Image (cartoon, rainbow, N blue to C red; front, top):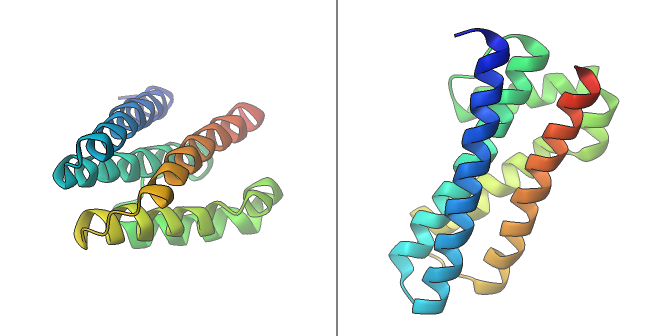
Length: 137
């Protein structure tokens, strides 16, 4: 698959994981279903991963193979692109990893207020990545 097409697929997947994850978290909180909340949180986290893959592939020509590599590539991009540093994408990536993947999915900590904010933060992250990609295209 051509690079440009792969980037589009990553972004499409990011938004679909976001929509499904947000819906599952909200429904899970309403129904007091911790498994649905945890699955939704993991989908929200995957939305961040997919968006980050799109960003790294677009700007560096490679797709990261691990969470560690994604963080390293975000640090590298912050050195080269002022907007990425200004938006704090590496810090935001790590925060979503901790809150959604670590605390909620793995540890099973269900903090309703935190999760409602995380939904908003994931959406902002995706929008910021799209903005950067449009400006750099």
